[in-house]
Image 1 (spheres, rainbow, N blue to C red):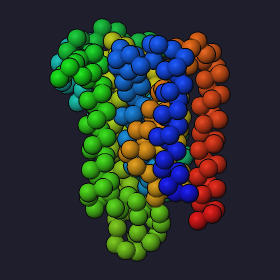
Image 2 (cartoon, rainbow, N blue to C red; image 1 turned 90 degrees about the vertical axis):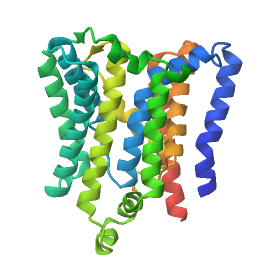
Image 3 (cartoon, one colour; image 1 turned 180 degrees about the vertical axis):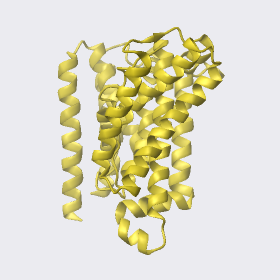
Image 4 (cartoon, helix red, strand yellow; image 1 turned 120 degrees about the horizontal axis):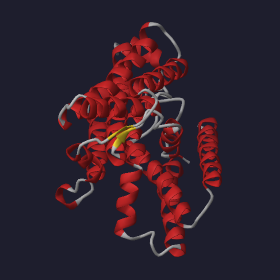
Amino acid sequence: MNFVKRLLPAASLFLLCAYFAARSPRFLTAENWFAISNQYAYLLIIGMGATLVIVSGGIDLSVGSVVALAGVVAADAMVNHDAPAWAGILLGIGVGAAAGLVNGLVITVFRVPAFIATLGTLLIARGLALRIAEGVTIDGTPDAFNALAYGRPFGLPAPLLLIAVSALLVAFLLLYTKFGRYVYAIGSNAEAARVSGVNVSLVTACVYLIGGALAGLAGLVETARLGSGNPTGGANYELDVVTAVVVGGASLSGGEGSVIGTLLGGLLIAVLRNGANLLGVDPFDQNIYIGLLIIGAVAFDQRLRRKN
């Protein structure tokens, strides 16, 4: 059954691609796939950080608001204070990392459940984004910064390369470092990991910091794609991200998940939305399909756990 769980995302993605390819001649074009990598880069980049968080047994509901806050801070610095593009990029990633660190400290130091801690950060980050931008978008980000979304280094879309770098980083951490083994151990049984000598608080704080930094990077890509910092952007991104990680085979109970699984889960959602748009499916109906997808994935995971 575990083999079936690992195989299911890839098989589902293949069948979905085959269906949309048969229904729309535009689906398999290079232009459409470049558009997918651009439009849904946020999902896969944030998903890498969310993989760490969920494998560790946590949850981060603040990522959508962190996307907005990082984008607004970067845009404000570049547009209103003449900061260079590289400074805007560092600020955005730094803001995301800071938000993630706050989540980690609230969870580990004050023992606040991750759901409540990150829900609070969601509201705080959204409020800060609206305050900094004064409730309006900050337009006119420079071309050097917008290359994060529209650049073509080595002939490939820049968002695709950022997804690859994020995925390789998280895969390396999970598979080849003690930190990765500790993340799995904490997600499987935090108390047993603590008794074994793992500094659970430190590892948990680092997990949320990395997740926040990647959410900040995703916010920069979104800001570059739109050419503006939007304080209301990133709404409901956390739902798509959790769906991608869980559909990819991770367990909300922790201790289970992989980068490949999250990539497949994220692509499944991106392809579903893209193909549905090509076929003219109502956006409201798309949300119904995504909702059914996450319910089915979690129900399947729970059934496997009961059998094991």
